[in-house]
Image 1 (cartoon, one colour):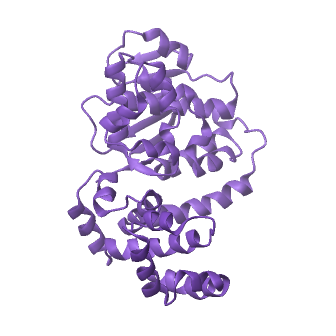
Image 2 (cartoon, rainbow, N blue to C red):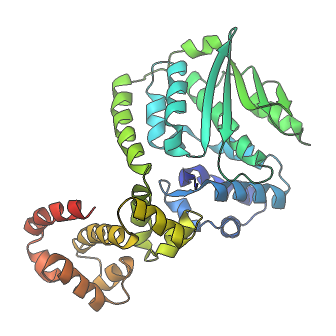
Image 3 (spheres, one colour):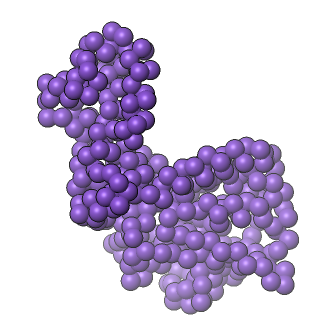
Length: 345
């Protein structure tokens, strides 16, 4: 199974890579990631590609704590909608429960478990799906990000009791101690943070539980849609269409698989790649042609047509009128077309 993660995870990658003497664009290409994903924080990219990027970056730069440096620059907003759910909980305990419940919305290949015993809470992270031989950078980034999320909610003075990492002690052990500000144990059975149980009762200043519940409802709806392959492909097409490079092979690359896999999954959903592409192309076309300042030749390229004339023929066949006729009565035709687009999806 191909697990996906929001590209916002790499928001600070260029800065960290350059500081380590790397060319961010070249490193992204080595990991089979498009540099354009850095400009689209909500784009879903393969988890295995991100893991490969982190491992390559650490090895080629010689910075063995590369993942932890990424975590140090990360911020709660990088979690997108999940950040709102977590931030608006009344206590740290409720925030961690929300994070565990909705983490898959941000990162499909990671799970957070919470266990409490004798005044100590163990927060354990597990990674799933196509691990490279030594995914230590991914664990560093994940555990370091978890520490920073809790710290942003509890205050800069908060510290965990211990940090556990399931790999041998690195050369630069002091960096890990300074980052977590607590004892760091290597070659542990799990990758986890130990925190005081009393920390769960800490109140989060200015939280708004009503906002959290509203966002949770929206995220629940998004999550259900993304569980299906037709939803995943639709989302990928929406992200890739404006680049003019939206083909089944490009989408397959996005999911780190081949075109046959895409066709097989969509057949199980009762649809095809062409049907989804047509529906998303129609929706984007209506929005683009209403921007009268945008040249139609440019619009044609963004919709994947080789020429403006090809787009014109497609548009008339799809909507029963020319683009100029549509523009002259755009508002009325838009209302009439919405049910058609909804049915197509």
